[in-house]
Length: 463
Image 1 (cartoon, rainbow, N blue to C red):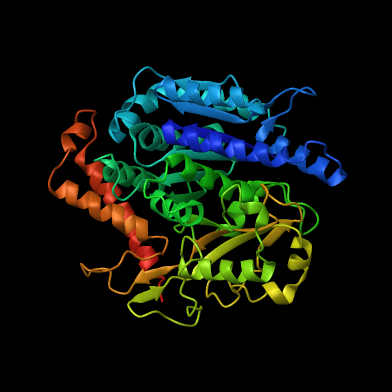
Image 2 (cartoon, rainbow, N blue to C red; image 1 turned 60 degrees about the vertical axis):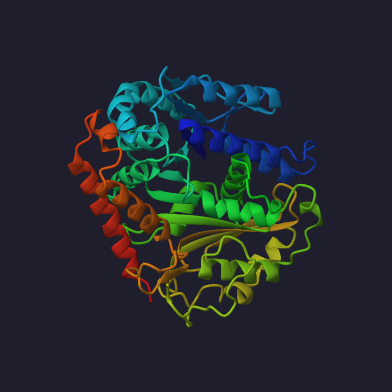
């Protein structure tokens, strides 16, 4: 079952490149392929993310690169070629002029101009697959190409592949980012993604730079200026942990992207998913990791309930039946967990250890705990746990108070970006930059309404 990656814009290409690096690093960590199980793992992973090639050839990624400037694409292709373990396919699309961090330029100008060419590139990649499991679309919400072109292309994916599941990996900009109009770009993209829950994408994986930065700072060193490359590596590690081959429970799961979307599915207007991983350590420390499965499961459960980015300073008093002063608890609508490493088989077979993981969460109690795994370690960690959630976290009890805290619920980032965009819009700041490419003010108002309705829907579930 194959997964095709659609990487849009500078951020999308950089994050996508790190994802393929993580996959090749993992499957080539045992080059001798001494066991039958290791050979099967290599074959399953390479068949999912890379095109079938002749024996001894470099792995060729199943992906389509899209950017309005060729510089980033050529840099990524050069880096992959220099690494020597994998390469990009010949299919990619680039133009001569960027989108200038302007959603309207990307959506209304570059989007229609590149639609047919990108569709042809994607069609060629899909035809190389014997069976397609899904499309992984990676883009940023901050810039003009990722947000504008990405939004335009997503609306036409159903025409090209109407029955193929699509997971949108959206990289959320820093709250105090360098792009002055990033709040506008995010609102316009989200307004299109969330307006019709039954359309593409089937799920939205939200990966916030602020949350990733906090996790990297805690685990890789207390650096104030954490490089974006470190955040990209963490995103790639989290996603690889969910999508690499699984052997437990038997028979092995072949449609891992589809299963990921199925496990996290809930009401059609609740499609914002988040990822967490335990542990996450620097390269020189990971092999000395001493975490046990009971410890990882206990910490993972609390991460899901509190919505915390890392296990440091978590509120250990919080449970599905308790509350925190000043907050409402957001229920866990759905979740998926993957255990990788020594002892995973024993963990998954011990139903008493997992049955209460989140069995008392209101919206998920009717479903069997979606735990999967493999005894094979991932990327040098003796034992690691990966968690994907739809819901969870804490929502401020009074969302209208000026001093209200941010919260850790799925809609926290929506509220923050919506408030910032409204302040800009009320002051009529930068609106002329969007109007010059034909974007009407009614489009802004419609997108604001969609995002605010989503925030209201999430707020109605908090208890």
